[in-house]
Image 1 (cartoon, rainbow, N blue to C red):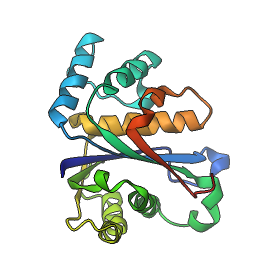
Image 2 (image 1 turned 60 degrees about the horizontal axis):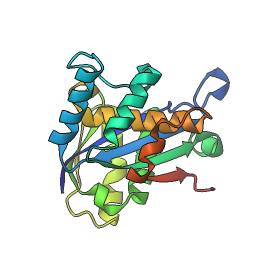
Image 3 (image 1 turned 60 degrees about the vertical axis):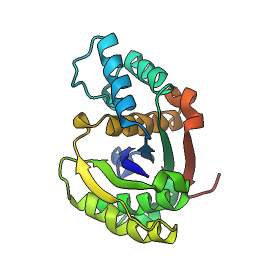
Length: 207
């Protein structure tokens, strides 16, 4: 049983593609058996490349050098993850009229339904959100609770929003989701060296 799981995503929940909505979203649930080691490894990385101790690794804002250094280090740290790529263009007619929190909750339910069972054994799952119980957090909890039970998880994790700058686990989830979304848009595969550390699924499953 993990003390914490960490959830983040890359891309937006909108369907107005002509106005700039992303065609795909990537979702990540990351877990670690040793959060202390994960935190120590990323703290050392910050020192080695001259970053402030409280620097937040965020894929969209990180330079190529920071991205490469990050994935080089986390390849040696203890964690695993479940990843879901959502092709929004293929599901537009079914989801385009629902709210962003409802859509994110629905996609998280798909991630939970596919995930290796070992990655679901968490006491708490933290989500990158400034509000501990935002509409998005509530939607994720409502959408995923029956899926956890259907998977045989007797103790459903408690979902809570937390700011990513306080949790290296949330920064790991952000960097993984961002790297996956970037690669699926035809750009560099920064996470190529850690692909053996996460289970990858697609929605809809047409691949």
